[in-house]
Image (tube, rainbow, N blue to C red; front, side, top):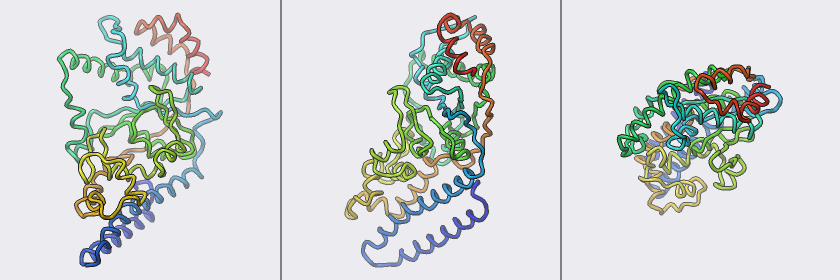
Length: 359
């Protein structure tokens, strides 16, 4: 909303006021089923109204914006946590001068692998902040994920691995010449990815991640690549699978809940299929979950959930993209020497880096 301007903000405030007055009026109605039908309409169309306003703002930027993507190569946005957790406990225990380097080695390997796969040297890395503002909205957010039982050995491995990820962000990427590396205190990589995409409409982006929260960003210009399954997920595939537009995925998450983030829906637990039926008007009004979704208590929970699952999180900044994508092979050699990654220099990784990343 911060990017929509005063006029659009005024329109939103007027609409919210009118919807609130209409809802309070219906609290006094005795007509059976009327209030639930209106609440369903408010839940779905209120969200779509905000989406249309955001899309209108994006269209204006698309008309005025200049291309970041010359030569038709996709801009690759990496959800860095996705790569990190793929590598955790799977990389060999590499070290150099008493410093663990396995995660750093693995991240560079993935850059080479994905640059070749996607035929692009245009990388943007997005990182999660240690602090999370969503916990102020919902203290239980990701609570179970963060409190998994771990052995002392696993705790030490996590500590060493996160230290390597930090060094990769602050030292390795800048020294390789990869300039677009972003983190914002209190925000997740998903928020940064969404901000970049919304601020640069018309650009071709490939998001490297397996996070379903990112489905809401899919478009004709934005796809998701899951390197674990080696599959691309597109807007068309999403519509074929779920029967709704990607922008409506927020509705599914706020009503059905988000299991991966430990955010339950208004009916408790996680009910994605039921939420989809509700959105597509396939859920009978007599259904118990329908009644919960359209109740006042249910709407309050869905409004809270929307703040949690809609990307980007309120307060996410705008990130300026550096379009100097070309790298220098000397920087690659420097990093390989610094961390004793001789296999990169002696194998075909050197040639791939030079021909793809330095062109």
